Image (cartoon, rainbow over all chains, first blue to last red; front, side, top):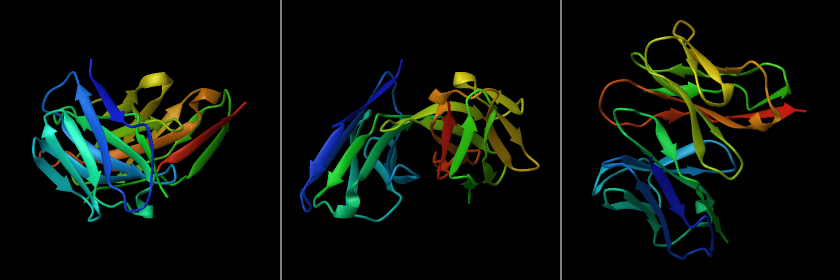
Length: 112
Length: 115
């Protein structure tokens, strides 16, 4: 069966510090991968998605970036965090033909 | 363009009563429709989806949803609510065919089931 992992689970970082969140998927190959941010326990904002290694699409301009160095690894990064980057970050995967997205447990980021 | 609306921020229901969480959508062509549930500080969990076929879709934990093309709705229902059903519920829609595989999510509806 497929599983999706995210780490860390919780992170407290000062403003201006760098960020690296990691997401890995097991039990499947060539998944579509997604990064979402959820603010205040509400709606999801799509940040990035990827349909293959090295292929990243950005949905919103901001100080975040994403990379996909391996087929089942998706990394969210920032060189300098802002207060507004605080939130709950969710990684998800899907197989295009099946459409359903499967979400990881999330990372709670607090920028102080 | 595709969009989805969840008109209620919160739904309150007594345990044992039926529940409905509303969702309407706008998309070109026949939609792919999804419901997800999120418990506090957790990721979203898939409940059910409609792609084609029977308009009544049955999913996990006793939930079901009915696709109504004329009303462009996909309301989530359960005959008898449990306190443990209290969570945040998201409806999502995706246009059919190829291209990007990006669904659009609603803002979510908080379901509170009272004992």
